[in-house]
Image (cartoon, rainbow, N blue to C red; front, side, top):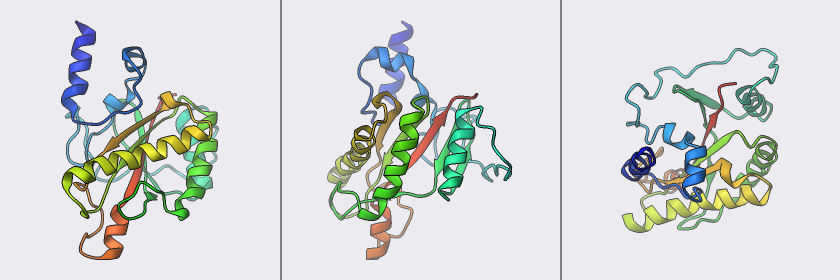
Length: 204
């Protein structure tokens, strides 16, 4: 009964999870179920986008937790981030990964960041990464839904190729529905062809 309710909640959530290989893995790792589903609605009503992201003081980190390790890595690479509220610690990276027009091929400028991230995540499999794929408004909604999922899955394959555990990666596709730039200009559409990363961490 408990497992049936868990499966039903995943089916009703509307998000695409491509790295759950059977019920056993789903039961062992429910971190994705804890993560915000969109920028405006979340599964747990006590959550929401924080009015002001938590600012971590610039002090030397002791690296006693996954959170410390991740924040230390992001600072060392000058990567901006926001800390989101929730029962698990979540860190959303502001730097995004960009793609070519109507393609799941990653823009060359994004590869160095993916390579550095792969090395880090391969050392700490307890850190879960959620990859959210997005598109511009070029093409139909159905094509963009599929393309956004393929973009997220492309990043997953690149991470796995560099040693990141498959069980630590989840992917979701949001199509054209959450633009961060205008779709009225070429540069704005290029900005929206992206994948965003969300990390879900153990508390200690």
